[in-house]
Image (cartoon, rainbow, N blue to C red; front, side, top):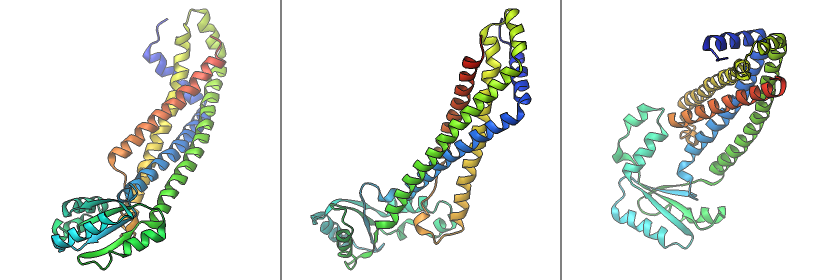
Length: 298
């Protein structure tokens, strides 16, 4: 017996409506669990972008004056390269600094319009050979009064705390979301089981008139898949709202300098959405698949 689309749609809709309370509970549980997972990804990407300039072991940055001469730039570079306490030095010219500035203040176009490339300070990103905070501090302070040096900015506890906090929050939220996903899977399974129990006599009659196993199973499996997908779409809206909330908050608080790089690109948001859709489909498919295999004797 062939499976017809109008039959599948009608039976799937009927099953969803008959157990509307369980259906809503399943969708909400999927949505909450995936929203937490998506939120963890947003925080992870945002803090990763905010601390991108400190990756690779960079512990302090020597900012030069925009008007610093080439001799002054070369003198600072030579001192850094020749220091046994410095592992690596990366020079950032005005053009690269302006690109970083535009990314950092992407939400504030008026600031970008007010500054041009010539006003950008070139800099040296320094990765020390040690992780000792006191030695790094002493090393950076050696350059604060050099000719042409504007300021020396240290990563230290602020950036390290942000990165540690990001990892902890991400793991904690993902752990909670996985537990809730397990609960959502059980709810989907129970919803399908209840739908099958309510229609057990119809199923028996369908088998007597020659209905195939797939003809009976498909509507129930599609019901679980729909619950997972709808929950994922709700989670997508929630993650977009979280991203938008961070954007507005940071745009209204320009004094939060360390967080100005906290942003999530459209590509990162899109990747998070794809993961949410995938997980939603998996929860729905696994829950309904287990239900029809375990509780439907066909």
